[in-house]
Image 1 (cartoon, rainbow, N blue to C red):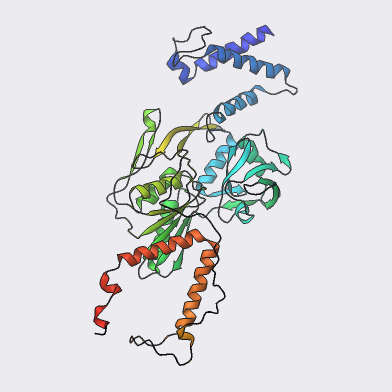
Image 2 (image 1 turned 30 degrees about the horizontal axis):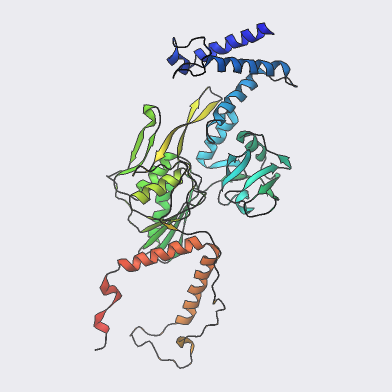
Length: 453
């Protein structure tokens, strides 16, 4: 056994000395057991401990484990101990990452991370099994098909949630405010994410939803914005909805911001290495869209979503409304190890144009609006006004009579539905209307020529 230990330690030292880190420290390492190693010097005692543990597992673990698996697990453990986003990518994981950024992948449609050994939901993706089943941001998944996931790493847990389209899965959920865990049954599906969609909220007011940032998001945004403008005489206001958007490609977020500002910085990154410092600037040659805008964010808005919200906030280009964002302000770089594996390593932090760090603090909205259920106090629809009375006088303003009572009630019903179903969007629309009113020329609001003297 001692011979095997020495042999294993020797082999491991050769591996470490062949690494770039060891190359930097070559000639500096000494065979000492000093408790405090100088910066850049390999901790030889720690390497001996690693070799001893490695060998004990090989010889004494209840089941035989091959060396390749042990070393891959060691790499995973080394990365997962850094932060929640650094990870080891085997061939399957790397393929999933590529599919995720192009917009089509299999599973439940849920963005997750790790918290205290459980899976934490960052956000369910729009129009997916997870979203339709009522999975919410902040939910903790504690069991998958009645199997506890405590002790599994993120990749192992995600693998359990994958499966053929149409197959069923049961998640046990722990939710804040709910006294006991509960089960949710879902049916797996092929997830195809529409990155950008738009609709008209009211005449003159548009809505654009970005569900995540993919390679085509910038171009899709331009198309949807052009569609809104083509369908309206004047686009008086725009709501950009980034709620529950888990992020995605950095370049896509830069393209989105560039659509709305003419010049200046969008975001910059800083890390330990010189190439970790990057600056992303707006294209001054391209005219920006100047439609008044409200951006909606919440605790499920992360990474690229926070870059967009932070940049538009710093440039005073939009009013940010909702609740504080997730606070994922770090850059992950995929570094290939071979044709079949890579590591995803956190290499830098994001900063907004004014120098604010997004990491672990998020973007604070200009106007905080919590998600709430809104119910009108007078919702019976039985209110009587002068226009409803038989024989009422005409308007007398030269505009003629029209069915004001019917149209007014229809508009009221639409407003109440929006307020009840999405109060944050309702408040964003009201704010845009207020901005429009305050920007109107005074003569448009008060026509003195018609005032009777």
